[in-house]
Amino acid sequence: MTFYKWIYAVVLIFLALGSPSALFAEEETKSEPNGDSAWLKLSLWPGVVWMSDDNLEGLGLGIVSSNKNTTGLSASVLLDEASGDYIGLQIAPMNVVGGDILGAQVGLYQSTQGDSLGLQLGVINRSGDSFSGIQAGLANLNGGCVGGASVGLFNYSGFDAGILQVGLVQIADRDFEGLQAGGVNMIVRNLSGIQVGLWNACGDMDGAQIGLINSASTVTGLQLGMINAAQKMDRGVSLGIINLYRTGDGGISGFSPIIRARF
Image 1: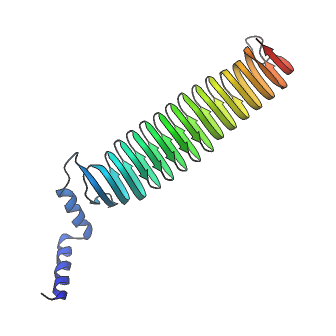
Image 2: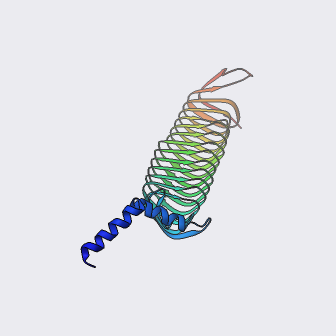
């Protein structure tokens, strides 16, 4: 058979299958045992996959990649998604994990629905449940407890948080233990540690607030700033130009210049 006849035969095969993607789809149908794992997956698009087993245990490369559970390295041009758990390194502009992750996510947008342990590096980093490790980006958003460091313009923790938050605005929706440093530092409940910024606010404080404006419900420790406000002084010192405090059940009703202390 001449060379041209070989080309003609290949074209007829592709026409009979409908398209090159149909060839991949047929391969996917034949080789898709539920729960099996592939050591190598090449993904052009969902449904256009070479080695299309449910799970990945090894290396995954593609434009848009979608797996169930992943152990290893997966890198994609647009989106890398795991509907289950992830162990390893995930690299793409958008990284999404439906379960828990142990490892690192690097890209523009990272989102994990479950617990996260490791590193999130990007523009927006999001953890739906608890996070332990390091987050670095413009916005770090956590729905659960945080144990580690969040560094960015905006850092938010929806539950108890600890160790370090550094950025322009920090908000801890529950208790916080550690250091908050930035422009605005807010803790809805109690602080055990230090706040350093232009405006620091918390519930009961056991530690220090250093900034232009400091506000706390109960102070045990040090307030150092231009304006310090404390509803109650337990054991501590407020040093500033203006020190405000409450003497009854109403609002701020007392004023002390320079220093206010109780031991």
